[in-house]
Image 1 (cartoon, helix red, strand yellow):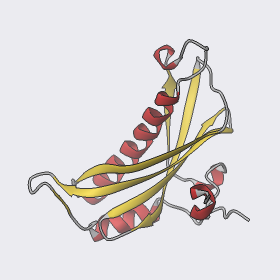
Image 2 (cartoon, one colour; image 1 turned 30 degrees about the horizontal axis):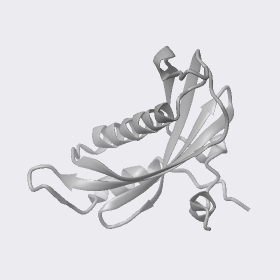
Image 3 (cartoon, one colour; image 1 turned 135 degrees about the vertical axis):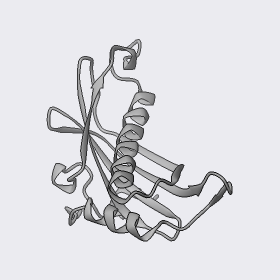
Length: 152
């Protein structure tokens, strides 16, 4: 079995792999009956990080296209409890013709508690079809993705 996180070649558990961050409050409603943050909430934190990056790119480029989530892989590393703050690092891992692979690290008090890799597809809402990723978006995503901390 292959490990998608090793194949990415970037250590998503290392905060140095990210320059783009956002913080999300851990809500009481995120907690399950066992007293820790529910697995579905981790996906919501990842979504918040991706949306934050996509909005930043749109603000910097003026390009306002839609993105559709095509794939999400989450690797849970530790339990998380309320209250607290989830710090989400988001970066581009690669760009295809019509899609972008994004890597994320989720951190609480400096400790990585989860990693994710998502593929988002550039989408034209009016035509209802995928479209190529605009050049300005490519350049901005590259600028927001530092040289990686490679996995040995």
